[in-house]
Image 1 (cartoon, rainbow, N blue to C red):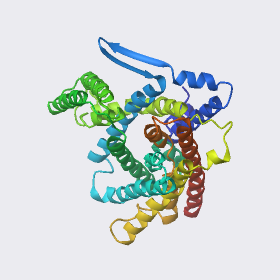
Image 2 (image 1 turned 180 degrees about the vertical axis):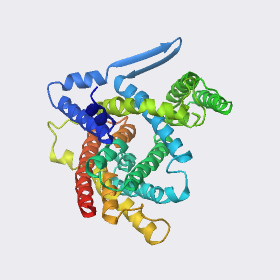
Image 3 (image 1 turned 90 degrees about the vertical axis):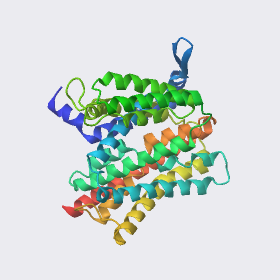
Length: 390
């Protein structure tokens, strides 16, 4: 592999570029003679069975429940590391991004509810525009904000991390149903076993992985969304214990998973979930309340909520701007937080899992439109703010 190619792969923008390519490919498949193959592939039944225990799901749900659990596992590892050792380890560092993230979740949700308040089914998607896509947002920032202060990038990352924590809480509280007590007990026993491994500094990394898979299967059967198992398991991975190869276990797992998540799991998810059918779409389909609520929530709600909360926090003396930054730069970052994409599509698939094609297609149209609009306008302001500082 050439040095130039290695640098491109390691660049933050690479993951975002591949996500865009995967989404474009999904759009091509969904709006061409390959549509039948595309939908048939996603609905392909896949089953795993051990004795009387069986997991049988279409390929799309294996992606959304299985591969995304690995994504949430890596997110959990990152959050744990940042809180214990990183730039979220002190109150001064987390105050502004925490306030920003809370407002960035609440305001888009309220805007969406306002658009859909008369439809009890549509209103269940209130959390869709509350999410921020870390890879996509950081990718755009890296492309257009290379000369901006590193503190601004850390602010964006911190907001996105708190946003992920909020998404995990929302999924656990609002998008889990029909709970199985037996499965939850098995999952709890598995987490207790992980706690024991951590407590006694067990170095066998495979033991954590094996028990983690059992916890995931139990949570999958419990009615709680399976991706939450990934996050829960991550909380029990030791940060100061070395594995059999002498590497700090949490750092090693996070590093090992990063490229798999960025260059395989998230693109596969995007390809499976971004296939919007545009052929036959009417103006009424494009401007329905679900689409408008998502677009307005992502593009307007995110910037109003985050920038407004930051302005109030700074002016009141509760927090301060990231070192070396100005308000124009911060505004550009708040626009980038309106790139929902992966997480918004994922929450949309949960909100309307039992609804028809129209609801899911509206989610895809809204998320793609709002995210693209936020990315374009955010890139413009980031570029302008960079020229101002030069």
